[in-house]
Image 1 (cartoon, rainbow, N blue to C red):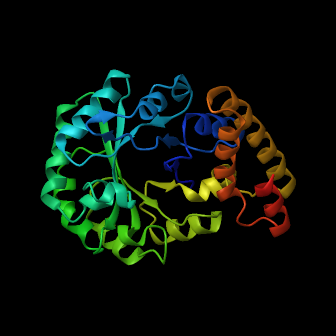
Image 2: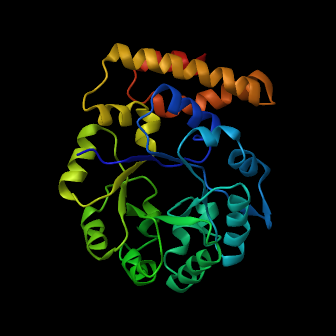
Length: 295
């Protein structure tokens, strides 16, 4: 049995161009999620609006995501999604970055079950949108997610995606599948697993332990191995030559499209491409890595 693969957002990486080119070159993804849309000083970011309104989103299975601390913030962003004709929206309760956490957004909201309940109740105002939620075990305590379950179970959610780490860990140390298992037993919604899925074997290990899962959500694993979903769906790994050929095609198309889109010239283009190699290069030959970054 193949489980659906969903491409999790990564702020600063998985923008509209990246999603479009990944779908064209690699594929294997059941849905792509946007980097979270958020408010700053009460206003929507121009960059966020540009990403959400990109025509290329209509060519792929795309779900816009929002991050909010209050019902008012959620209303503003969800209204944008509805105005653009989207029928799906994902709520981020998992972002561990300090700037968002300090504002009681993302994983920073998890210790406050009352605030989470009020935020999530707001989805009833948007009958044209079907909502899902992405969360972590908690900010400091893994059991914080369990305290949220009664409220989450009362909501008409499409699914929940759980990353089995606390926010303070960010992406370090080991995951906590035991608490994930407790959450999975009591969660009435379709559940996705998210976190440290870097290979077909990782996916198989998770699905063997949790066979009732309804999907995998992968972020960093796909940035480092953009062919991973296609390999999993096809049931066999790509050869090194196939990977090399696809990465060359991928990089060429990204370069072409970013050159047309970015306004800061060659310096901004190279900065954008260099950030992508942060994930593509960790397993590369050290001398090759040095040459690429120097170039």
